Length: 442
Image (tube, rainbow, N blue to C red; front, side, top):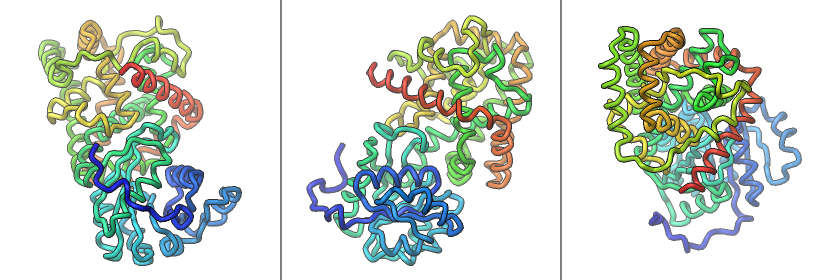
């Protein structure tokens, strides 16, 4: 990789640099702990009413200094990271941006950079460098080896970019330098429909009052991916996904297409039109996976380790896999090659792409799924609820309705919340094991 900066530039001593973090949610706290552990002074704050609680939580972290508000953090920090919801980024930057230290560097870590950049350009002093970042993983994932996007949007001095790189190197992530526009397009390609699929599965199971790990229909193999990742997503905060979906125009288009693909495939299923259903599914698979001869990302002997149910693999039935068929169909309709941005993909995306590979690159399994979808009604009620859920999520996103997004998300969250702790543990182990196996197999 050709670096967009001089790696040999002289940086100021670490003891002279303070990193500010405005917003101490799960991701902000993870950043604060790792950056301070690497020897940097961290100045941090959240909403003022959280001041006392944060002081208690970080009392033993001598390198993390909690302040009452973002004015105090901005005045005393050399690199300031806004770790707030994309929905609120403009309001928060407008409030604290004018207090930014002379010549400082400012960035954010929202999942959609267009509104973030607009806020920085509108409310920061002109002497300030703007270098947003985005860790493409959640706060519970080890950042080592994961993609970290760095966006050198406005550089006011030659030290700004190498200093940011030096600070975030403590994550041991893989750095990718992109523009804000490139970032938003790639994150839409690798995250938008992935999230929509899992959100819709959770909604469908909730509407059917089903805990899927208690059903033999959803045991073993890629069913474990569906269940564990769905619960993992719903164990997070709603705004982690809402900003990307609602504020990124490319994401809106893709979520709309996913709902359309789901609906059109479901109509072919219930009409019994196996010939057209098979033609459309196989055409999509041919376009997405043509020429792929690398080993499958996922293997049964790995997947079967990570069940929440304890039901043996032999007890499961075939599945229509509408969730995966619609995913590949939407990629085909939008002419998105999911392999183009693997270097910037999240662990969840790689697992979901691996699930699609697993189904489409094994002809007998795909043929079984096509037959089962059209001729067997075992999953028909589940597929109906899934179709309705996919359309519902698409409508919420297209209306730009954060309140409805939160209401839908938290309703499902309450239904599954008793299993989140176990799902988080199993999900972490599953991601680490499968992705480590993938790296070793390269």
